[in-house]
Image 1 (cartoon, rainbow, N blue to C red):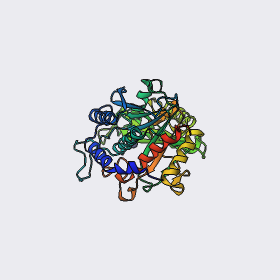
Image 2 (tube, protein in one colour):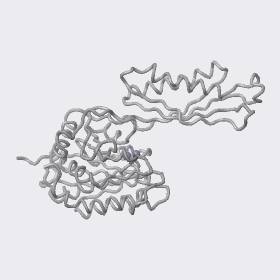
Image 3 (cartoon, protein in one colour):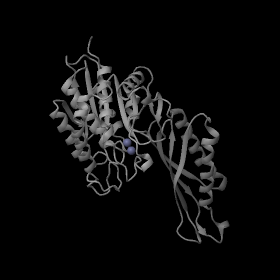
Length: 393
Ligand SMILES: [Zn+2]
Ligand SMILES: [Zn+2]
């Protein structure tokens, strides 16, 4: 029984919901219409709705047949779109200039709504399921804010689960992984101080461009020389700003970039080494630099044990043994479900959606969520609840 028949029956309804959300994208903490839509659907299904968490966040609470048992799990979907212009011209393309569902969160929201509808109809489980619809996954930390505003104290969950569509995998496949699956992501800005002057008289200046070049080069040694070759990390300098003329040495250079790591230890080390380089390299040129290092999302680390075994068992049940992969490497992208996994044991899976060969990549202006995978993703959620919270035999 891979796909649940009842869920397949409302595939057309889900496609309509998904395209409605896609047409009306809203970004970080401004998911007003989207959360209204989600809350409306949950109420329609007879589910208890809470809307006063993390601004536009919504939590639906549903008990199984016999009412609460003290056991509960959380299923999480993200609702936000991206600040980017959609290049698609199909009927359900974004109606909002400069905003687009380019990461498939329209599909994630819809699949969780589909599971809520099925589970409210059937209630074939014992305990409580919390449907968590979070705002602002794309960089603004809606998941962190939900946790800070008491998500797991107000809605206790023994375990929490997440899902993301994955264009690099064909439809029908699911990746279940123990350990790190997405990287931690931090940002930094470095200001290199110099002494500006005439480009023909460099000996009267301190050239911050030369110092910046040495900083850029030195940072390349951190990943290659300071962390174990078995571990992974990234330091990318992505912006260099300086200068205004051919014949003027500027006063200052600004460098910006990002740091990624799959473990807390590597993340700490990368930050420490980067700070050290910024503090020491300019000294050798008689100058100084400062760094503003901002911690972003931590690494998303799936727990082993019960949540991993559950996710694996359920994925195999709905997708078939051969379609469940556990040997795919992690992604250096980041995900704020990480904050929920820091609080509760759980597992985050990738569901294949295909299309990468056609340029349908996450955050690409031609991306679109593949509606064909909704019965599988929704069946995964529903089966996960029935398996994690079984009725007494
Ligand atoms: Zn994204
Ligand atoms: Zn995403």
